[in-house]
Image (cartoon, rainbow, N blue to C red; front, side):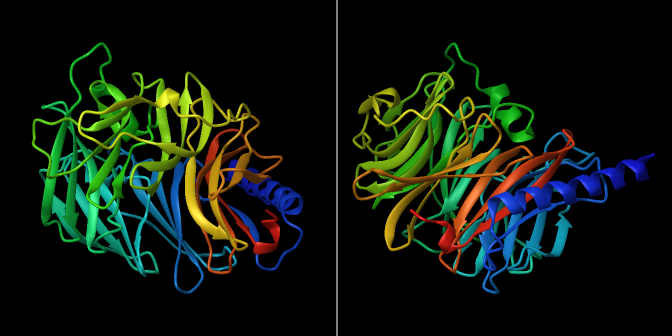
Amino acid sequence: MKKIIGYIVFILLAVLSACDLKKNKEADPKGFFRIYNDENYSSKFTPLDIEQTPDDGYLILCAAKIDISAFPGIYIMKIDKNGLVLYTKLLSDTYVSPVPNLIRNTDEYYVVCMDRQTLGTYILKLDETGAETQTAFMDEVQYPLSADLDPYNSSGIVIQHYNKDALVTLITTTNKTGDISASRAFSIGSGDFDVSQPIIDHLTGHGKKYPFQCNRLWDNTFYFNGFYNYTFSLCMFQFEWDSEVGPGVAQGYRDERCISSVVPLSTNAIAGSRFAYGDNYILPYAEVPIDPESYSASSDMKGPLIPELISDAPICLKRMMLNGKDVLLYASTTKSSQIALYAYDETNGKLLGTKYLGETNPYAMAGVIKTSDEGIAVLATTQVAGRFSRIAVFKLSQKELDW
């Protein structure tokens, strides 16, 4: 019976891939579309991020269901420039709950993840083939939620994590071997919204996925998008400030009104997006409070409502140059289960164009990158036969980005 189901799924994948390939691409040799099947039809993969490698192939980071833990394991896939699979590996079940982005530093790739038993934080280095090496373990950095390469220090990584006992969000800076240079805690508090279970559900993948994010905003000012003062808010701070001084805060409300993506633009401005009670807004330009204990409300940030997106939509925002223009590229998931791409002119905040990917099969956006040939690659989750969670990649050439 299992073999019969496997054959049916294989046929469905072939048909659906062919249909979507025909509708989304017109045989452009620099583009491709692929759904990646797995021989174990009951396996479940959640794609998280994609990065291009020097050979013009791609590394794909995924969360994977594992039997030994409620926390997801880590699955790495390497594909070539045409989307053909070169390598796949499910990492040791010691490593779980990866933060949802590959950290790229020139031709080096890093994954920040959690120890299944101690809940401490690992830094893993991947080579361009996808093979991993552990470079750091920090037992005191528990429940990692987000991480990114420090743009002012190529050897540094900024990590957002959570202390369950002290009920605080922490931002820690470290190098790739785990030498911590600074750390600062921010009280979550004990208001009428309990964050403990939602954070665990986020890490296990069994609940709402929160848009945790952290890095430098500009110079000595850092930011994190996460829980502070029992609400999900965007907070700005400097490590040099007195420990009793609170951050600047673009305040949300519980987890119902939040910033959903952030890209720094200047000393006190970002591009981003937000959601409020199910509605989604794009913010090509928004100023944020950067002085100690200064406040604003995320709901005051003005931008167009995008009614076609799913409720509280995950949004991937990248700043890139496309066809000679400085573009803010937003990628998300529509209510009709397509991937929507919105290109905004960074200089004036105007919409340049919109593109939709995926027909016949349902898709959910996972990530987007610019490619070396001036195109883009879009990573997605797709459901085959309504039950099999699989990885999909759309590669679009420069010609297809007619913005």
